[in-house]
Length: 146
Image 1 (tube, helix red, strand yellow):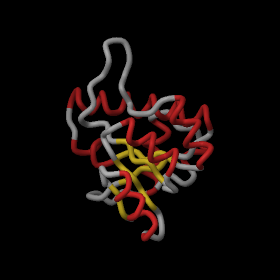
Image 2 (cartoon, rainbow, N blue to C red):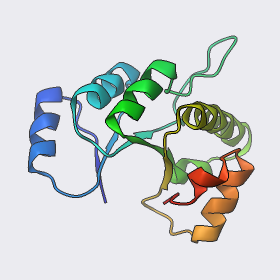
Image 3 (cartoon, rainbow, N blue to C red):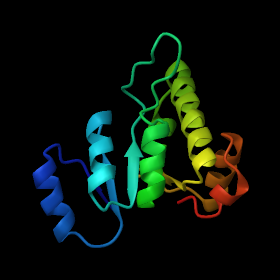
């Protein structure tokens, strides 16, 4: 499993051409994420939640209806960063979980798959399914959660 984090679009395009297997892309720039899922053949978009700032009336989860439709059309699954959930504490963890719940509602509405992605921790499949169900994932989404 390789997570691509290149910020230059043309360099990222070259890396993807040379890469084989599951391609996971991650960036903190929402506009760049949208450009990547529109134009490049990746398998999973990993959305980081830790350094986001919420708007005054809604959460900034890094995923919206427009991106959901693009991801559905391109058959791209959405990744949840499990390391962020495990390492955060208190109100930061609560905000991260709330943003993930918002993304789960959008992905469920558009029938997009979601995955838990972790580089630091190894978790049991049943634990991940239980976490997914507690966050509001439907059972069809928890079948291939990792």
